[in-house]
Image (cartoon, rainbow, N blue to C red; front, side):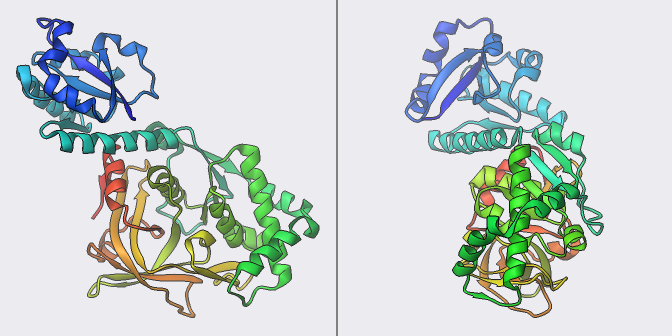
Length: 412
């Protein structure tokens, strides 16, 4: 059962002993769903950042106390009120004060069922925020030169989300790659090849080299305690003649969030998806947009094999080298999402349906056609960069609630 620390604000004219009795109808109903710990606002210092908190406005005349306590109160501020003792009036004033400061708030008021539902949503957001905070994202090699709009301000993103981007020279991977022998990876390479529907352009030697990259990157993840990595794959090709596509696929299979091309905004989006809905995703390029049919085709050369019904071992499309994955993904509901901006403060999200696995010869290996539930012209008029993330299943509502609660702007 979820524990709520209910920070109570009441007029000095009211005795604390009478607060529960005045609001017994609401509070007794909530106690059927949650474990509630009542905390007077003067005792805020006894709570930690790991405690889930709501602000209970019990009476009117408490606005100044909320303002005085503001810095210690949870953000976004969720105000619970039943309207008794002018509590709704006070909540409206507080909410507008926060709005004028550019801050998010929500008043929970009305039917118990609706209040319980919203509390559950806010608790899930709170847990996701805790999950993200303190995570380290390894940036292996600098971002690819063509990602001119996908950068992130490390300091501001740390202040907003509590994450840390760690620059790791790609030479560290190359050094470890050179030390790893065929004997160390041969058996695992054979197991992966055995699971594939087919092996096309890639040779057994290509598989061994790709697996050496995988092991080298995994060693770095373990050494630096990384929760996610983004790899400048193209720089790696120029240095050792193989790609990181298979490595990223296998790392995602194992729960280490891994993305391509050093794309900082996409790897954060990837990490947020895992925190909010517990899923991995397919990071891809839009390669075709059909506004009339409201369809888009996404493609990339790396996908978690756990997302696929079957997969084929291929080579990397652009370089015709190394090993990549052509995944066949299941038909059904999907969510398309991207969080962007230098401060990671804007996002796009929509639901849709995966209708076809395409197989164009002039595009990256894994390809899917998606019919969107919102206008596809977003990609031509107001896109948040190139790469977007596709999740199997409809999680639009949960992801929208999460990013909105963190004061991010939704792009349409």
